[in-house]
Image (cartoon, rainbow, N blue to C red):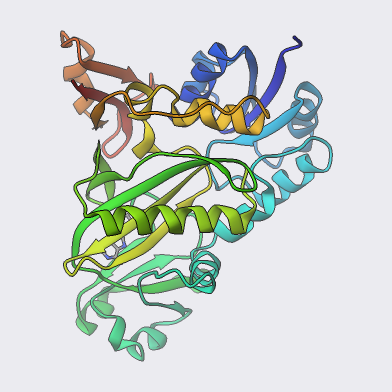
Length: 348
Ligand code: AMP
């Protein structure tokens, strides 16, 4: 069997975990990343460092690969589109164009009759003042925000005094939800109506960064079914290939809202490496490389803790119990709020 040469755009922890899963499937990974010290450098077979818009790097990358996927959604659309003209990119780049922009993403979800929080496109401070019904709310940049970056909480009109809106940026104002829980659905779509879907995962965020995930989520059966149905409907409508994550909010009255879609493997699915017979990473690779789909089953319940900033230091020397699995992303330096590794604990 000839090996597949899989190009991956992005070299963070998700790229690393994809490259590790690829070894088992005898897929050769070629990573293209704009960080010369990217963690995935330690795990891939070939590494290209350069700006995502650098034509020479794109050409070198395209020549080395059979097909391409990506580990984060903010790769410039033009780059994905250009690569896709020569080698197939999965999931297809048009999906990213929608998901890279919070406003387009929310419009798309609502057009499927799926509920999101109430929101409004905002270009100026005056527009915030005329949408008082969305306060308390969160002002979010339409593009390039993640892990709470590019977000500003507005508790009352008074908060606008300190607010400086960059005029060249677009925003949405989103109604703040009194959260009961947050969950995510991870699914891998192979082709039309062909999926592997993990049961809902319950997530806790601290300072808008994912802190813990556990499976199973403690939610009622109605929410379990509805969240899965919505995730399937989203992936079907996008004609998605690969692993996708849909993040949800549940309010105090058990209403379900889609928060956002991640067109890639997701941090809340790291526990699938140890809890399931096939992880979200392996399923992604199987789908994009058109390998056999394996019936995915849970072997253990599990919980995952993200090790953020200095948290990692304690774990590097820690003696682990036999149900604990520690992953060090081997990032070059420790920074506050930076995801440095994670620990998964399976519950036997
Ligand atoms: P995001 O980057 O939009 O996924 O936001 C990160 C986290 O901030 C979410 O997982 C929530 O914990 C919190 N958050 C974001 N938007 C809202 C909202 N409209 N209401 C309540 N909490 C929110």
